[in-house]
Amino acid sequence: MRFDLKSYLTRQKKIVDEALERFLPPVDGIEGKVVEAARYSLFAGGKRIRPILCIAAHNAVRGNSNALMPVACAIEMIHTYSLIHDDLPAMDNDDYRRGKLTNHKVFGEAVAILAGDLLLTYAFELIASAGDAEPDARTILKVVRVIAEASGFRGMIGGQVIDIEYEGKEADLATIQYMHTKKTGALLTASVKIGALLGGANGFELERFEKYGHHFGLAFQITDDLLDITGNFHEMGKTPGSDVEKDKNTYPRLLGVEQSQEAAREHVRQAVESIRPFGDAAMPLIAIAEYLLERRR
Amino acid sequence: MRFDLKSYLTRQKKIVDEALERFLPPVDGIEGKVVEAARYSLFAGGKRIRPILCIAAHNAVRGNSNALMPVACAIEMIHTYSLIHDDLPAMDNDDYRRGKLTNHKVFGEAVAILAGDLLLTYAFELIASAGDAEPDARTILKVVRVIAEASGFRGMIGGQVIDIEYEGKEADLATIQYMHTKKTGALLTASVKIGALLGGANGFELERFEKYGHHFGLAFQITDDLLDITGNFHEMGKTPGSDVEKDKNTYPRLLGVEQSQEAAREHVRQAVESIRPFGDAAMPLIAIAEYLLERRR
Image (tube, rainbow over all chains, first blue to last red; front, side, top):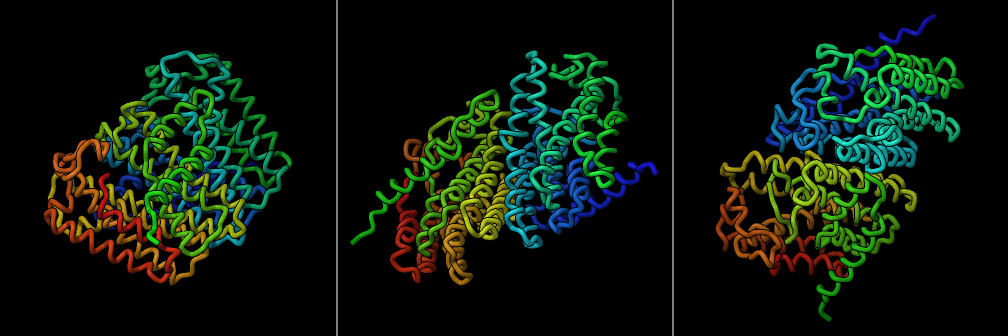
């Protein structure tokens, strides 16, 4: 029987959306405005890839942790905060994201900055609160650490600053790879890793998931870069060609379209290879990786 | 024997400064730039009030936790991140802070936003890592939760958004008090509370420290507002009168100088009263609160 990825993703996305709604409902009072702004971006049509990877890795090791959903949702909040801050005028200065106006275009820069700060802060509150439902408090602390490291200067923030520093300058392949490993790869890898960690994975298993995350992250970034060239506004929800316009360092710019496609295929192959030992339980992770090669948005 | 507050503060500040240097040293590579920006603000002459309150509360209950210094330093990092983001052009648009150029004036807005994000993220990494040194992982999780809540939309971020929303509008005393309780009070209270928490304080004791933090926070804000009127650039390290210029809602504006001074005195009295039961061990906390009435910066 073929694995039905489309219905799997639809089902998981619904579960994640409902959990996010439960964890961050609207708030009354003047300060409710910043919650409203955070919710605007949190429910702006994200595909929930990171929480779904987290859930899929958890299931691949047949985990059963009560902390899974709060942790998976916390990752989506951190991802969303990074998008809000990246879109700011001082950073990428984007007006649209997923076909909707960016946060600062709707709520103003001050509230957008605070909405990002809120999501980052609340993510850690959510994880720490999940500790009550989890018998092993030390595992939750490890989750906090893995996520904070992946989001911090050794991970996402480090990648972002490299991206900024290289804008308008030509970077070599090693630098581009290094940047992407941090900017998008670190949080994707962390998503998979903490799903497995919460599921009780051992050190050998965790390494497999980390390897999956590493290659998945690179394939994800390459196919994202390719979409910027080959996609259209309707498919992508943002203006295509914006990377070229901003003189961004991308794979297609350095390697050309065909070689970039080949590189993406190779990373998907390696991602899939690394989790073969988990057999059928890893089917969703395999299917999601292979889907990257067909993505249209 | 009188308690020598000045030498106590000098000693504690040195300990905190050294620990901060150890926890966040310079980093090589392109991404080192954002660490440099974070360090610029972290070592820009902060008085370290929050970590010192944390240490003092810890000592008041005769605590002995290995996690104390990382946790105390994490609070200072969160405080510093909030200053960097508050100073941004989209927020308070301040050029000077503690007599030095603000972060975005030196490093540009993009890096300043990321430097703030870095400090917030790294604070949680630091606390989670401290879990290794602490036999009770669940207490550390509680610390993460208390700090995240105090920094989030129910605390600091909530207060900041109220402040923004009321700029240029007249607020009544209840609203001003509510805003300050969140904007500055929440993190000050959390500092005291987690110091006691790590020291093994029970529920009754924690309530005492929370009450101290609440009144300390209000006295702190009122005396800060008063300084903006009565201080000078040399004493304050920033341009006095900036609150008036920005049409900020302050205590002196609403109550006048004399009644504001009286309110500060009353809050200090109540702060001191709440920790009397801890006797001599609470002497530093008492002295710090009383010092607020004499502060010049």
